[in-house]
Image 1 (cartoon, rainbow, N blue to C red):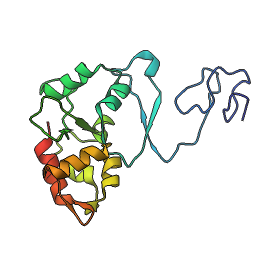
Image 2 (image 1 turned 90 degrees about the vertical axis):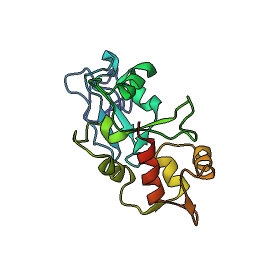
Image 3 (image 1 turned 135 degrees about the vertical axis):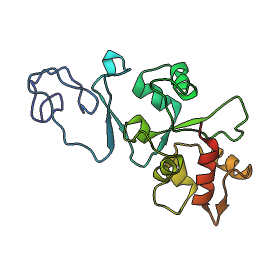
Image 4 (image 1 turned 90 degrees about the horizontal axis):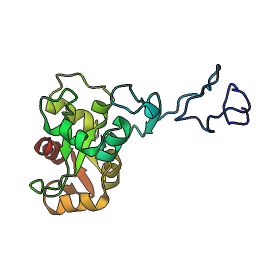
Amino acid sequence: MNAAGHENACLPDCPAPPGIGIAECDQSRGPTRKPRRQLRLLASRRGLPRRNRGRYIDISPRCTLVGLDFVRSIRGWPAVRVLDCVANGVHRRRLRWVFNVAVNPASPVRELRFWRDELYHKVSSPTTLEAAVARILGRAGSFTRSELEIKWTMNATTISRLIRAGEIFEIQGRLTRSTLIAFLKRRVQ
């Protein structure tokens, strides 16, 4: 490891920052690093500012639904453009699997969650709603509140409000799979 913190050494005066998880080196023998166990997204050249191209964005594989800010950061788009990709059914970059997890779905304020696999282009195009929901929830039969917080990147207060509103049900401290399936089917945008 050299002074810049790279393995398989670049030059000692390499300008790349230590930890090169999100930076690439301009030296002829660029840094190499063993991949982490976390899922990595290589930002594609489409729709990203030049400074973000080719950079890795780490996200836990436990997260299946991500928020608007995450989509904005990986695509490099303003919120209006992301929301246009949700609302416009004929948009060429339409985001199909988006869920409104707000307590009141009729409210003008939406709390959107985007399916991570769609953002990573890991979804075949003719995926049905049932198949998408099954992949989002995984194999588990029920979830604790903390598991759902991580899986859907959701606030604990929002989960409590959804339970009080009767949108999802909790039995003996666990959220049932059947109510989560019904909830996601109702809330797809």
